[in-house]
Amino acid sequence: MLLISFSRAGWEQWGLDYEPLLPERMPVLLDDDLLFEDDSGPRPTVVANAWLRELPINGVPAWRSWWAYARGLAPWLEFLQRHGVDPFGDRDELRSALGGFAEYRLAGPLKERWDVETWNQRVNALSRFYGWCVENKHSAAVPFTYSWARRFTAVGGPKEVRRNNATLRCAQRHVTMKYLEDEFAQLFVRALAGLGPNGMPDGFRGRMLGRNAAMAEFVLSSGVRAQEFAFLLKYEVPALPPRRSPVPVPFPLSKAVTKGKKARESWVLYDALARMHQYLDLDRETAAGRGLYRPAAPALEVRRADWEGGHVDGERRPWRLLLPEERLRLVDGAGQSPLVALQSTGAPFTDWDTVFRRTSRRIRRDFEPRFPIVSAHTLRHTMAMATLKRLTQGYYAQAAQLVKDTDEDAALALYLTRTEPLLVLRDLLGHTSVLTTELYVRRLDVRRIYREAYLRAGRAADLADPAAEAEAADEFTDEEVC
Image 1 (cartoon, rainbow, N blue to C red):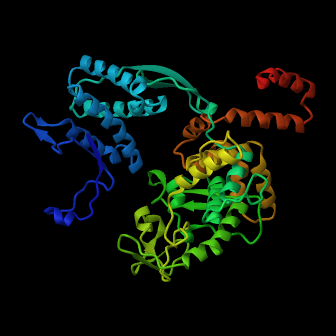
Image 2: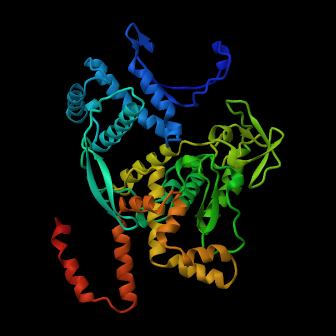
Image 3: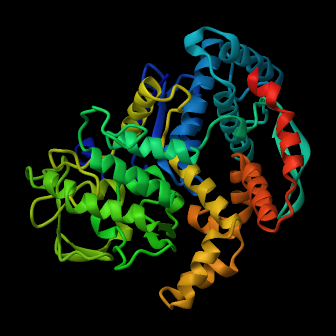
């Protein structure tokens, strides 16, 4: 079975009267013989593709999510095809096939084996697919069984949740390293800049070290997602305030690059913003001047640009409407790309996963073998934990009060002093509800943050008992030695 990505490029030569409605990058499933039907009628791939096409109007607007669902569906259909099982046939036969599929993917050949998290993700995709099939009368049978459980949330109280019994229990998210502690975050930024743990040059001779370190520090401060910073334009970077302030600088994000196409406002700390401006003024200017940029697709010329928008091919357009692929085509009056991150040749740079992964492995090899493999989302998690820690300890509230007293940014100061920590974090991360934020931070080690805040407050009020703390710490001595 083949899984391909649809593109409308060149549709005029396909013999069609109208441009296809299929979204760009939509995954399409094909049998190996490239046929969608035979003597018995339409094949299962026709129903599968119909479900994939409806994902954008069924709460799944992001193309990467379409592919996550498609990668869950394709192996299942291929497995059923190999064993002669109808995906929409008898329930008992489907459940027998599900058992064989589980054995194959969890204990079968090593190259075909999935870990528990991958299995759960793809089973949930199949569950959604069969729910749609039943609703649209493509199938009367579902291979899954479900059970109901009660989950208590601090915001909504008890809540009934449905669990797919085919999913497997896995370790709590906070037992694995999903974010970087302060020391590891500093180590990562220094390594990207070609520095060792002590801040001195370590002999690494990579390219664009200033760019890499500035962007990582910017993401650690703002918590933006990979697509949001990879396609950021230099015009959208907030201006650097004339004086250093402990209160973060507001950072609006365009809906064209955010998840779910929802515009939101994050923030960035002054020091991280200053480092980004240093990169823009020095390293980036040097790279941009090394040659004219010629995009693969027809260029979109930008003139008279400011922080809100510019004249694109002669017409005023706001940046918030420009999609990632259109941002890659932008060329300013000097023949340069306006994207923030540039290669040493002046071409746009977007492959941040490779940079972060290689740097993580170099840190593990040269400095710290426990260091995790960092992704863009690791930095987002790190920002969330660091921000929640500061909000919980009242750091931002105290800083905001100082700013408020001097009338520097009364609106942001009022927001920080009057709003609950989880509500602030919800807005920064772009979550729809505070319940999403609560579940998000629960998957990280959020209990440590509240425990540290409690101990810090106790010590500040002279309520801590050093003897009791020492006795409790002593309970773990043998465990640490082991």
